[in-house]
Amino acid sequence: MATRGNNRSEKVKRIFQQFDLNRDGGLDREEMAALVIAVNPRVKFSDEQIKAILDEVFRTYGDYIDGEKGLSYDGLLRTYDDGAGDVDRDFDALGLELSFDEDAKDKEIMVRAGSDEVSSSIAEEMVMESQKKQRTAAWAVPPNHGIVFNDTWKLVNDLTMLIKRMKERQVKDGNFKGDNDSNNNFDANSDAGWSRELRPSSEIGEKRVFWAESGHDYAVFIKELGVLRSRADGARSREEAFDGHMAIGRVLYEKQLFKEALVSFKRACELQPVDVRPHFRFGNCLYALCSYKEAKEEFLLALEAAETGVHQWSYLLPQIYVNLGIALEGEGMVLSACEYYREAAILCPTHFRALKLLGSALFGVGEYRAAVKALEEAIFYET
Image (cartoon, rainbow, N blue to C red):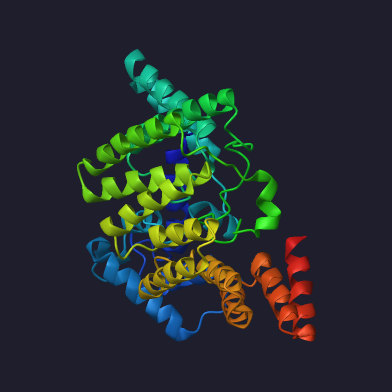
């Protein structure tokens, strides 16, 4: 079996070949437009929207544009690496399949040409990758726009051990309340935008975790966490520092250490002010802490950034609308929330959670007929 990275590259290659109709090694504007439309079969783009998307791609990835040929394969791969699309989703939407014969040939070539040392290193790499998947949350593995740099994995592993150690001590002392299983799906704000969302407190109450923040164990944890943050700040590049703080924040959020997660996401916002994700995550933390007004303001910042880079962040835009609506409902602004749920449903008609929330909000303001229609749509897509 090919490694995950090889599969990803092969999928991008197959997508590229599917739309490089003249086989000149580039995707011109017409071919690129066909790709955008094909991988979004449920979206009806206007000519103006397609033009705006193409302008953004060809401007952002100008270094990968080869004259009249258009965007190169490396350029398309880079767009996926930057989060402009989901490789697996697009690959499946196009009905493509990997050629396992080619994978087998590649393995045979490696076996024939490689030494025992090379074979060993490949095996070790596959084992390490498997271990990462087993011990790390799904968000941290591409293509979910998680960890990018190898050193960030070390931060995540060290932080996971610190939290585990603190939990064991608090459980032993009788200070820990709740079940903090890393697989409890509390991280309800997937970057993919429509897989999971913020839930009302009544739905997650039994899964909430309460850490003892006044004891010695917590103080030690905060001190050791500060060391990890310093390591992230000392990274070789601004991008790697951002990657580190985002990953630290995601782990803390997943473990329901929301106050500490806020610190990490705020630092990530400082490092990459125009990146939507830290603002989005910051808003999620604020909502979890019942700071609805502040959460709303942060989601508005995320929305502003997403609309500025409409192509790069289009995958996350529906979820920003949904979470903004939820924050508005937290403030009691149900009518305003309806508008944002409606916007999310327009952008992603199959977003059943947006439809469900829209239906509930419409019911709350007395729009019963519209509420029934929205809820019927939600039921259809949820099943």
